[in-house]
Length: 136
Image (tube, rainbow, N blue to C red; front, side):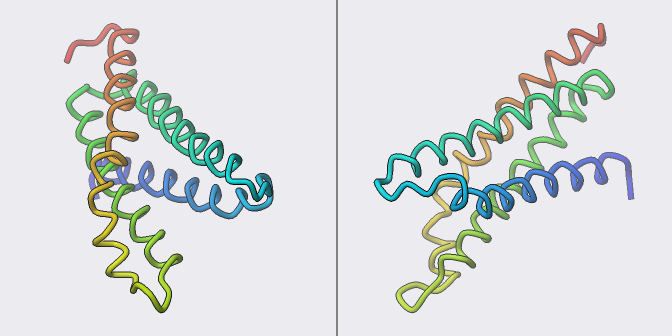
């Protein structure tokens, strides 16, 4: 397996494990029933994904060519978005909607979720390239 494929799998897996940990910890940390905590928890999840992908891509940018960093993070964003949607569908499925129906329903959110990973990663990768004194 190539170095780039391994890097992609490590990044996507780490982000998905982080998302899974988030869903385990949120009910413990945010136990407010009013709904305000749920909004804050959701924003926290988005912020952590943006921060993690941006910082990690910055480090990647100091070590790899920008094209490779961008490709790794674009594919990782797609994998994370699909994995997140599948995980939510599997855990939220019930008698009213099957997991497949929920997954299909959430497909419209994929571009947003991909953007949460890819946009900061591209910026981080470019900044990493710039600070390392490398060219594209």
